[in-house]
Length: 133
Image (tube, rainbow, N blue to C red; front, side, top):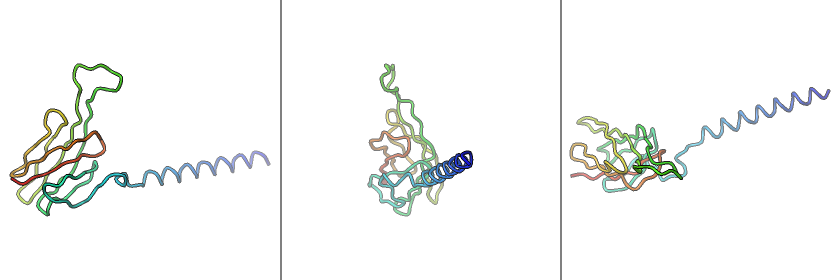
């Protein structure tokens, strides 16, 4: 009888852990940041990794990937490193991938648009401002 209770407890524990894992993995990771799918020019906005934002119905901007070469905490490095963000920008005239970085390339250009990397320290999202020239 005792082994039956132990088996029942183990099965219940496995089901509970599975349900908890399913619940936490399905949560939207963008709920704690101010993510909007549509923004305006000259407005600072956030794009989570893998998501896209439409800018004034003219551009679609997607964060493809991020990179982190920053010096680890409590280490002494020759170079501070930087966060990099690969973004894809589309408009009716074409598309382009641009890589921005917190140190070397905080600004980029796509056609007559200027893309500026705003203050950022996350590998999960990027904060940008786009202006129209």
